[in-house]
Amino acid sequence: MIKGKRGWIREEVPRIILAVLVVSIIIYGAYLLYSSYGNQENQKAKTFIDSLEGKINALEDGENNEFTFRTAKGWTLTSYSKQDANVPDKCFGKGCICICNMDCSGLSCSKESILDSCQATGYCRKINVDNVKVYNIPFGSGVIGKPFIYSYKGFSTELERISINKVIKEINMTFHSEVVSFNRYQDVPSGAGGV
Amino acid sequence: MINKKGELTSQQVILLVLVIASFLIALFFFYNIVSDDYSEEELCKLSVLGRASTSSSIKGNIPLKCTTEKICLTSESGGECEQFAGEEKVMKVELPKNDPQEVADIIEKVYAESLYSCWKAMGEGRLDLFGSSEIYTSFLPGALSSTLDFFKGKDVHPTCVICNRIAIDEDFIYEDKKNKENGGLKSYFIESSDKVNVRDYIEKNGPGGSLSYLQLFTDKQIDKFPKAFEDKFGRKEVKGGVIDEVGIIFIQIINKGDPFQKNSWGQSLSAVGANGALIGGLIVVGAFVVNPVGSVIGLVGILKTAVAVGGTTAILSAFKDSQQNAISAGYCGELNSPKQVDEGVYGCSFVRPFDYDNINEINQVCKNLEGNP
Image: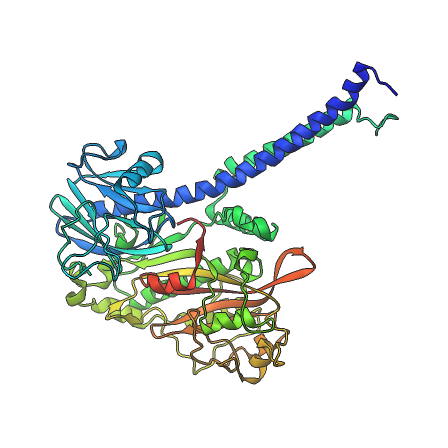
């Protein structure tokens, strides 16, 4: 049977509309699930960096304390000092801490790649000191007297213990089993216990 | 309904479009607007129910909207807990300055309420919240395998939610908080913490109504702890210091099968609970007394009845390790979940306090932490 053009339109258009609607719902649902999952990870990172900033600010000069932090697994903590040439735009002009969506736990990441990640997806907070340092000396690495130091910390566990030491114009941070400091490959804080 | 040609009428199409549009609007409201209208506790319960009623394969993609509640115990109205510096929504509970017994009572109440609210919010351990990704395999035959692995400290990691963090203001604890190591503890803190007895509190008090926390944790089956069980929770010292912050953590492990079914040796957890036995290297008499990190360390003997009743009853155990004795609530049995492939989901759930500064222990127990910080 040959149908007229009008008949075909009347028959098929509602079906097409329905199909489009159903597909839209599925795509929208998938998007919601994906974005809510992504948001959760972003929220964790944001909460972590806010908490770290708050604890740094709460310390007075010459004071140090150790805190437990809920981190964002698969993200990396790094820092930039005032005099650094290459910093994320968000950090310009001051010492800065950043958590960036790049997994550097157990991996060696280049400064450039971390900078790119921080620029694109990182959460940064300016700190009112010139130098903010993270020394990350992985346990058991390096040679005595010449520890191999990373200036970032990739998070592979949910909870981390960080000791924060505030001295004039400088902040040092030490992880539970590792020394973490920002931006100084040679300066290990005293008592940090390098490898 | 449908005309002779099998076409949908324009009325039906409009109706369908309206229904779908309503669904989309409802979905949009659920994700964006409704969340602002509910308290965090209600939102958590809703998301828990959402998780429990979702198919196992997509559970992980449904966000668990449970935010860790932060409670600061401080002696001054303007006092702060350093542990929460820079964090939002910290609830302060004031401790009296000249009444050690009152201080102890408040600490006991906060602990008990936190344990109970966590247990309640997580569906009393009876809901499958984390799905099949945490189902483990084991070299041991039988349905008990993953539970036994868990008890024996094999590489089996439950998923956890940190329900509460309870911290004590360092000014309340230390003579000189800047010199914790050598400054010593305040005598008022020592006097107050010596009076803390959570065991006694949960035995004699409840959240309202006639039932005690203990009865609520054990499905009304246990009224009293045995005399021999000495709880020192809340005042144990660690590494020469004091536990100044605890995390109330909900832990769930999904089992391959019913942990109360007989295994290949004809033994089950309920049988062990009833008789006392040695299975798989575990000495278990009367009740589970396990260290969630691994080893079974002691016996309580109070849960014979609770464990023996069909195996799917609530349990309340004393988890004891080298650092502390802690009150915990637990449940082992079938978990409520949408039935899949004609098979029920089984598992064990616990809620217990951890020394929040002992991150190694928490990281070791909890492979994944869900919920918001």
